[in-house]
Image 1 (cartoon, helix red, strand yellow):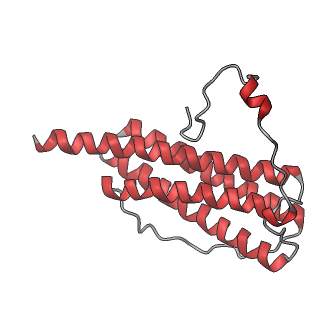
Image 2 (image 1 turned 180 degrees about the vertical axis):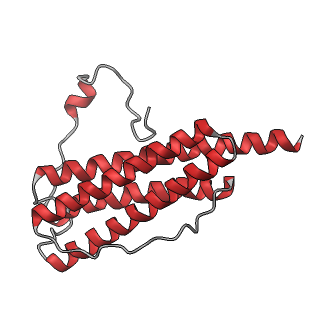
Length: 181
């Protein structure tokens, strides 16, 4: 169950729910759409840089875990690496279809921390990545539904990566603790 879903009542058609007044949102309640290609270019550039860094991070994590005999965890990192590569392709296709010009990230060097503490930081980074894509989708609220669905798909993957990083972190922490005994 998601922590924000507090209503676990199976029957949603109770008298209490029917008596609630609806709240009308006004235009000022929503962010202004970005019609400016420079702003969209900056968002796409930031997204492509992040996905490129994450792909390099998970490729390195996969190799690190494999070298240390943690093949089951390396497979998890491999799946996240594949997701990040797919995200780059999705973003590129979306930008090309919308005529958005963005800065292509250069070569990324592997400067990532694959210790349990470093992987714990990746949990937080992936949650922040999910927030970025949620906000990105809000900016594109007047764009095509396909763009919003693409960003939603990436956001969901980022949330899953936070969980998978937590899984790797806990497994590595348990192994470190078992070795120290």
